[in-house]
Length: 262
Image (tube, rainbow, N blue to C red; front, side):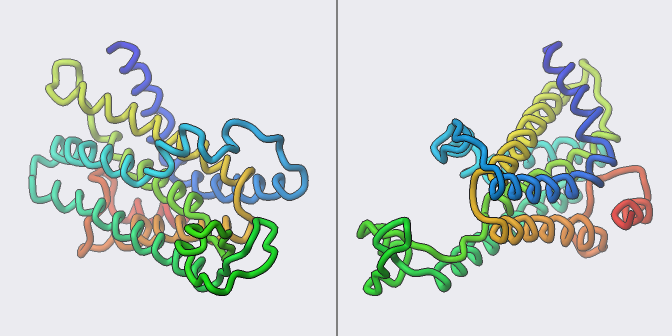
């Protein structure tokens, strides 16, 4: 338990800072552009992380929203109830996960449709010979073909959105104070460490996507949708009274608004 508490203390001192919330979006954009430039001009040698079957990609990234949802749900419920003691407010804040689910579904469906309507089926990965008899990606792959369309990076979108959402929700830790005798101490400490680990995985895999996969335009669009989803919710809608609201904090709404304008 002591090691867990030390880890939680470290995360409180890093991910919970306002500066992290302010500069992480810019850091992700810079990483995406820098990694893409490196991929085009001086590709890195193949590695374990460049293999799509690596453990982090198969068991974490492909289930990124499920992991984020399942860890944020108890974290938001426990921390918000600890601070407010009001079940209604907790349920209201938990609706951010429903909003996030809707964003995930709409964006991934949009990306899939764009790839479908801009794509064609080919005989080989070199895009030789169009197989016009197959008009969908599923049919094309089922018959051994290779579908090529404008494939907006779902990884860039989802990892951006999930990392920024976790950091936003963890800002509540400025107000949450528990000691070892508190009945929620172990649960909150464990969730903080788990969410911190998850955020590190999302940022790492975002970097891997930047340097190994997709082309620049596909990653630009993916990252743009991730940033738009984050700012449209936490930077705009959640500041309104008719919304799920922001994590409870002692700072005023105006201070929160000002932090986004800087």
